[in-house]
Length: 130
Image (tube, rainbow, N blue to C red; front, side, top):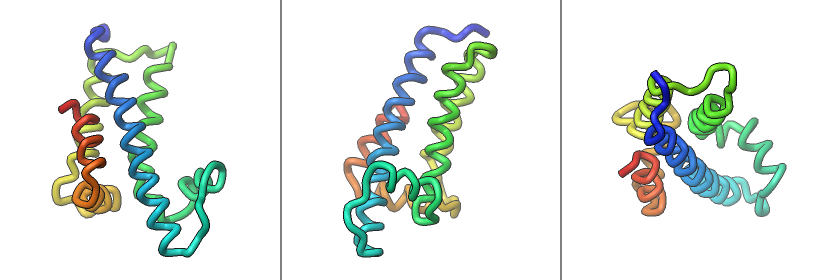
């Protein structure tokens, strides 16, 4: 089925919300990392390398991967996004951001971030379209 304009707009809005949420979660993790490991302020390439390779930031990788998947599917000219694939992406977002009682690393840390940060709660609601 052809992608409806409203769904296309919703996917893009969700993507932007996920980017803001990812940035806030990364910033919170960076601050904690710097305190625990007594590191000076990290930024730019250093932070990117830690995000990719350091176990401290590994919990964020499912969110990073989901954003990358959305980007890929939006830009794939050979296989344009369909209504079904867009709805599947939006369902993946809902599943990831509604961790329930899961003990996966992302779920545990995300629940904690939601409890500790009102800004995270706002970004969470935004990403879920509420």
